[in-house]
Length: 305
Ligand code: CIZ
Ligand code: SF4
Image (tube, rainbow, N blue to C red):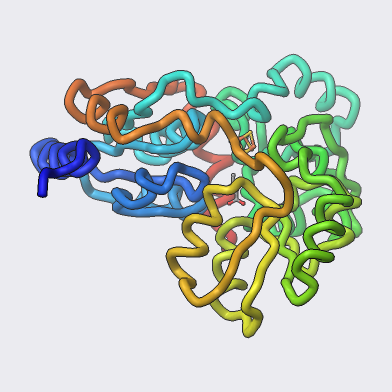
């Protein structure tokens, strides 16, 4: 039988990876065929840790820009490639340095925790970064009673439920997770009354209210593996459902609403990964002065599971 174009591309990618001493890091929201070629597949926290531990020369980061930037900051001596240069996270672009500065002036005694979904410049102006997997721990452990939490208002609101500290939110949001509405969850529960509902903390509060579990993608993977339930309603980007199904073939996973697709995450295709390795594009660079300050905030994030 003739080999498909995808099989050819995968072979070429495997060959180039060896030749260039490269490792492919893939985020849980990527297309299935990209997840399948991952050396490491994970959430931002796990992939950031990997970036720091790897000894290869090159990282191809299949995700969005802030993730590749984070890998470059943590591992500055490696070449870090983002296969599609326009793959960026709209939430990360919702806050700029001037807006953060205004908040710092308004709350001078507060510390700044920034979600990893931010630009390197914002990380450099933050005391600590966090991901959805460890946001509560980072806020609890930071040395201040008042915490400016940027940019996601829904994650800020969720974190504030677990701490006596004052959490001051910014008004950013993820356009994919805010698409999930309470009615979608109610409808899905009616169709699958025996299903367990997992939602991401980037969802609106009224959706979080209806969930059985609120978790990051890494958290959802762990919960699904351990659960006795057979059916799950998943309130996050649909790329995770591909991984959930692959890892739990005996269980059923349903999307919590229509079109939970992050178009930025879906830009990367096999052809892009191949060209990225072949032409060593697109190199991610972070200015030294920004990287050194951002690294401190990221090291705070890496302290917590
Ligand atoms: O932290 C991440 O990787 C994101 C964006 C989602 C999640 O919950 O894992
Ligand atoms: Fe950004 Fe949301 Fe897409 Fe994640 S799913 S990259 S937070 S827009």
